[in-house]
Image 1: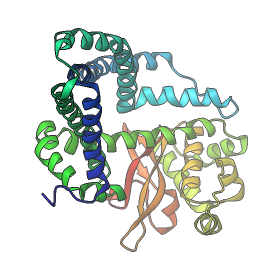
Image 2: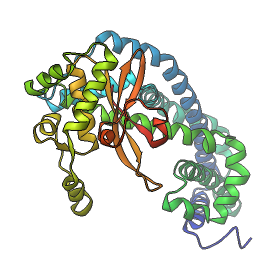
Image 3: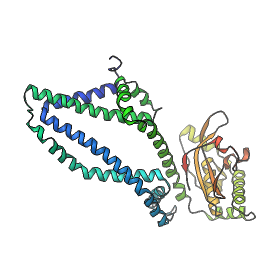
Image 4: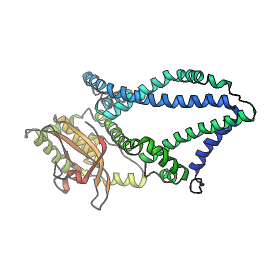
Length: 376
């Protein structure tokens, strides 16, 4: 019992929910508490039904939305367009290309509509169902005691819902500072192990973290898509340089390698830019034109310049972000490219070109870990 009721704030928060509901139930009496309990139970059933319906509808509508967006043949608004035009293109392109993002957006829309439409009906149904209990006396010691017991049951239901939310949070963010503290609560551990885990199976503990990780990756891709907009219009000198580099070679792979060697050998790594960011927190954003003009940049600048020149040469390319091996047993933030060659995406790293051949080498994935950020 001592392990169950400890001094952890989560424990006291769960107990306070039950105690407060019990107090309110005592004040309302039996009939009023019954109505609240019925409303809570019906709301819970409606919520579960709304989630199931929204998930089903989103899964069915997702391929149709994707096809519709593909048929629209979205045009890149370019860097000179308004912020709203750029934002709209990025969102629509994300919905077209990212299946989890598309599903999540449709799910939220359908769920919101269903919950709005069922809100009034839920209250009306709760009132009708609780009519037979109106004859239960609310006053007197017996009525108030019964109301208190019903209120305690209602509070326990709310505490269960909160525990489920905390359980999901700990599953998605196991290394977050609050996760350890939450799991130190004896009452939380007991409810989670005896009720939440058996009731949900592996949904919250196993599938939700996977979904959250994949969703995070897609959001990273959506964030990276901004380069498709801001780097869309190439300065003439960059386009001319791309044409010059590839004029004497034929084929996708030969052009891609020629541009890789040019960017890798012409651009110098900007240690001062890294130092300013690490020591002063100052990040100097630069577009491909600035990298081309100054011949300096960091990994993301190499990758953006390569992507811009490759597009100018008619190649299909994307920027990828993630982690790169630092040579000391660890990994740090990094960016590189993938180029479409013979129907597959071949990886390459212009930043590391001076340290070896990093154009589609074997074992590339051993030193480059994607974290979801890429642009097509």
